[in-house]
Image (cartoon, rainbow, N blue to C red; front, side, top):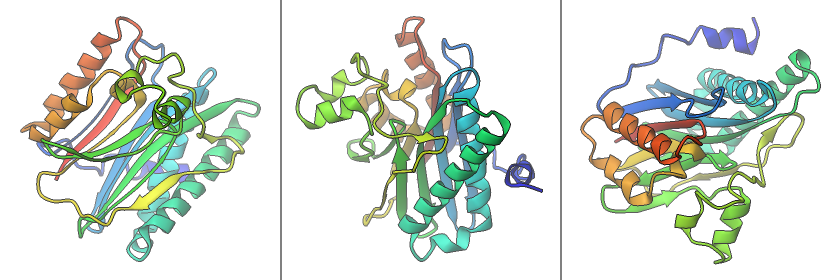
Length: 261
């Protein structure tokens, strides 16, 4: 039984959405959904994953799917390793999953060009957070009144923001939006940004992982409002639909995971 076959045994074992957690994905105005979202809740902690595939016919859809499936399986079988050095181990899990994705793509679909972004959060049972991302899928950590931290995109427009050429508010509609400087690709070396945060999550702190189809159209203040949610599934669904409507028939796939601590 290979890695992807073993992953199928996990399906149906995950907790359903509740008042404090939701994950949703919509195709938007695209022909197919190349996003993939997943989570795994265990006694050791909670793992959240969002990926946004890029590529030709089925390429991006398969890349994000295979990557997430491999990562979940690797993590489930090796959760104990995360306790000692979560930053190093989460990076290793990501590299192994990327290699598994690449091998499967090359074996099953030789010649296909496919990439995926990823945003991953590991929340240990002691409330210590480790985050990892590649590309422009994002992780937000916030309260109802302030943004504590967000991941910095590996993209051309993030570089423009960092140089002061454009503002954060201009990122979503900029012509260069979508031009990535890093991604997970077939046969490519993985270059993630990963860190274990010294500050631990407190009650009411909120995590949002999302693809660019979400953050392009939902402002930071609107994102902060999600920390006040009494029904994570209902409120996340509302903002995803808002993001699609604001795109005026040009919406990307829109996916997000919301967890209120």
